[in-house]
Image 1 (cartoon, rainbow, N blue to C red):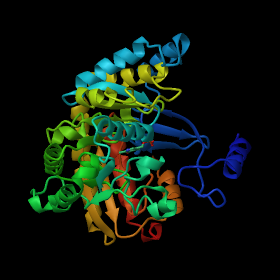
Image 2 (image 1 turned 90 degrees about the vertical axis):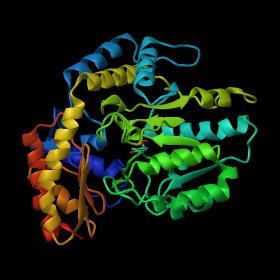
Image 3 (image 1 turned 180 degrees about the vertical axis):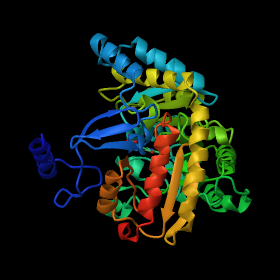
Image 4 (image 1 turned 30 degrees about the vertical axis):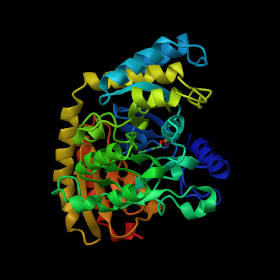
Length: 432
Ligand SMILES: *Cc1c(COP(=O)(O)O)cnc(C)c1O
């Protein structure tokens, strides 16, 4: 058994790329045997409490019987069929459900296979919308610094230029407009000057801007910034004034994570286009959706070419649709709001002690997200190993050590996560 997994890891190291990792000098990876509820079992036998929800997606925990049953049943009936010229019940059921729970007006659904593609689709829709209305010069995007929208090329172009390493791509990426990062924190007093940079860009460039794209309330992978919802409502007003579409990237915030069903609800606004991914399948497979208003759909379908120019091979995959439908249904039937506020309260209480550590810059929680921001980056390889020794799965990035557990995590399990987090960031040797 032991020899077996050592060989597995050796082959992996030699041949398989991992996310944002060197192929020639990678940090260690740990082989997983199975996962159940909020526990991940490594092949080597250790059981880890999951603080990451597999990059924020596994909201119901792993191996949920209802999810597994849905997958098995759909796999036996119709795992896949092309979507050109055909449709099926899982696609219709999911669209009906998404239209029903989404902010007002979003009632046209485009299915794709991952978050980045959902963002590409949203951006293409915005460009094509303006084009079909005869506004061909409106083809630039406006966004804020500190954002993250995915790894494909056009999604990259609206990620934070510094974090997203735009310099690496030279002049391949189009240069878009970046307003200052939303500076008023969630829960602080609103200050209208926070809009200055955004408003100036609107005033100066609105004739060439087709859409604003933004992560509502929580900027996730770009730095875990929790910002004031008024930033969204003010941006919505500017969009309306200057005939610019509003794209909400809810891939991380959508479906409950921030304490509301969608991040936009904190500001009581509705976007023109909304992207869903990550949480959509509850972490059981890759699937995504881009929702648009009737107005956007009508614009896109008008004039030439008269159709929306996108249609991936696995579009509307029945398995993806059924899994997503089951996951959202499960969410709606659960007491997720109670769970999220319980998690938020416990994280606020139990992470507060981190503030006393010299190299901690900030500690913050919102909904099911708890963040400890450090003055310096962690030693990733070392702290990873230490967390595993403590029986938890926490994967920091850079200066951020954070928790985004499944919504179903118990108080006791969460307590083990917050304790381990505190103990390891207290250890100076884990810092670079
Ligand atoms: C993860 C993420 C994406 C990209 O989704 P993938 O499925 O990784 O392509 C886009 N936007 C946001 C806000 C995300 O958190």
